[in-house]
Amino acid sequence: MTTAPADATVRVRYFAGARAAAGIPEETIRLAAGATVRDLVAELGSRHGDGLTRVLTACSFLLDGISVRDHGITLVDGSGVDVLPPFAGG
Image (cartoon, rainbow, N blue to C red; front, side, top):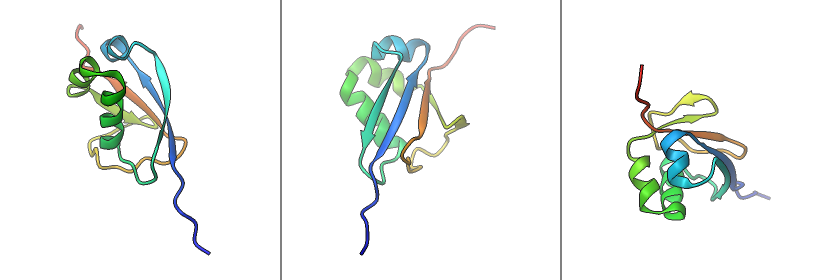
């Protein structure tokens, strides 16, 4: 008997301008098995609208504390994704 891959529940934390655009500091998202960081970003934009979608285009992402360069990385159940807009200052 084969089992279907499990959906992924991902904790998303927003920082700075991303937090302002989303209107919340964090949320939990359930995605279909095999979903990628790219899929997550699309889901976040559809949930929170154009303001967050614009911010997301400039954001970097940490997946379980590690910088994501490839948005095609598959998310697994229990992952944590931090959404980090560009920071200014010095």
